[in-house]
Amino acid sequence: MAGVAAIRRSKKKEKDLSFRGHLEELRQRLTWSVVVLVITTIISFAFARQIFHFFESRVPEDVVFVQIEVAELAGTYMKVCMYSGMVLALPFFIYQLVMFVRPALTLKEKGYLYLLMPGVLVFFLAGAAFTYFVFLPPALDFLLDFPLVGGIEPMISIGNYISVVTKLLVVIGLIFELPLLLFFLAKIGIVTHQWLARYWRYAFVGAFIISAVVTPTFDPINQSIVAVPIMLLYALGILFAWIARRGKAPSSA
Image 1: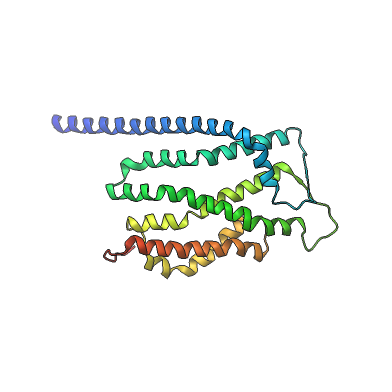
Image 2: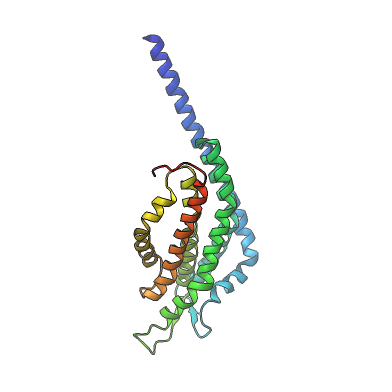
């Protein structure tokens, strides 16, 4: 009995040490991520003015930006620098996340994750580009020239505008990761392309629900501009899932 108790105490001690080790590793990776974010944010100061004008260029020329709070312009300028720093640091964040979860993965799963790392950044930037060049112009035209009410001169708070734009860039950029997520889930056997294709109707409804939550407008045209690409991404995810399971025996998801 004493031997069994000693073994249990030893296992408990090893588990506690392992848990502490994970917490220590997490603390170190978060610390390095913060350090890198501070560095990239400082670097962004050199390009903040250009980034600021880049964001403003989506708005029609006759629209006037206003500052309604004392520190709004300075705070917005700092936000732009921080958001730009986050984009610059994104590859480092992805690397730190992968390195943290790596011990819990099998050798094959690690290979799949390494394979997808460059794609995560590419698909996120593709989503941000879609938002900036395709979605924002019609959405802003609708919001600034609301068809049911006329004769009102739009003057936009610069802080509110930057917050809305960056939210859309980030959220839609993350939505564009859907094909890669489905590819990884199919690779590790959680879903199959048959299962995904079977539930396409639910995905169709979900795409419009997501677009209604993400878009700042409520008109069906702007919602469709977001919902249709989500459905195309889902279809691309089905293709990726088929590629992931190609040559393997079918399994129930």
